[in-house]
Amino acid sequence: MKYILVFICCLLFTGCGFKDIDKRFFVVAVGIDKDKEKEENYLIHLKLAITTTEQKMGESNSIVVSESAETITEAVRIIKSRVDKELDFGHAKMILYGEDVVKEDIRNVLDWFLRRRDIQQIAWIGIGKPTAKDILELQPKSENIPGNALFLGFGYSGTETPYVASNYLFNFRRSLYERGISAYLPIVSVKDDLFNINTMALFEDFTMKHVLSKDETRILYALMSDISKVDIDIEEEEGFKFILTLDHVNKEYQIVTPVDRQPFIDMRISLEGIVEEATKELTRDEIEKLNKIASNVAEERVLSLLKKLQGKKLDPFGFGLRYRATHRGEESEKIEKWLSIYPNIDFRVSVDVNVEGTGVIE
Image (cartoon, rainbow, N blue to C red; front, side):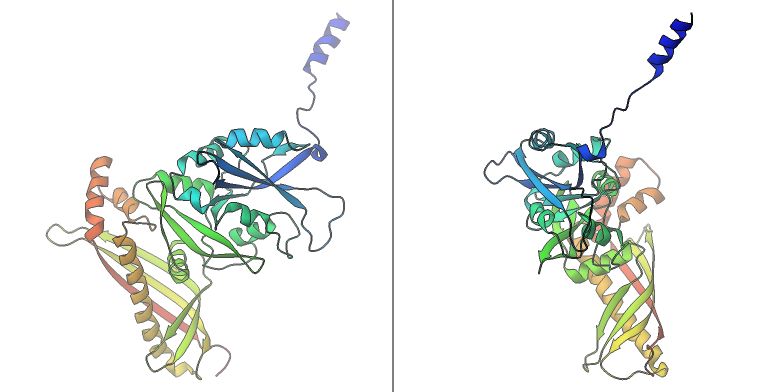
């Protein structure tokens, strides 16, 4: 009886099913480009972190392995045959698509990331310009950990700027499939051996439809997100120019659909900040004048952006979602109604600017 109990206990012992850390390649970023030689194929790039016992300042040890295949799964299997360690996607925090990929239906190259259980749904996602490989191969001198320069920029744990319109994988997928909102992705390029992230692309019907300029990206993302460090440059006809640094940005809007009148969106924006730079000396007595000037300029720019997005039938703010949530009826009917309303809806924008000070110079 004793031997039987010992045998049963031995069956309960389980071994470790995981490989040691020194037998793993940690994939920190994944890139996807179109194969120019084979149109039906994709070029899959994996940025692999190389673990070392001693890490020197300013050095980031990594390699980029690329493979062409019709599917991501096939490419990853082939890459596994080329490396001597097991690929671990648990640390893949960056997904980049080349420009050629997002100009077509993106669902085929998005499905793999959503189904893999070891891919983080909070991974950052963006567009590599002109290709994803160009971005993955860059190793800035300030980068000590493979891929960390992109992680810090997208995650705001390093730099904070409204030009970087970062987006998560789960949020991009949700906006892509949801009716009433347009998905967006930041665009990453290389300039002077550094990452350049200051524009964003808008999607509709699963493809990239429009790319915003730097100023449009700054305005749109400042209103969409909770980021507070925003600069506004304002210039009068007389040549006087000043820069406002905003510490607080708040936006509220309401969709009004009266029975006998044209529907409109009433958007109210409040901005608070200080004067960071000016072409002439300023005093506190001029604050009211600055508030009025800044309010008029901000209203004009926001209204211009809203009308431009409306003309291209893009809705990154999610006005359609708000309409669906605040109106009764069948979902299909509400969607059709909104699609008929949005192209002709009127925008009423009011901006209240509160300049708290003119800096330390009086």
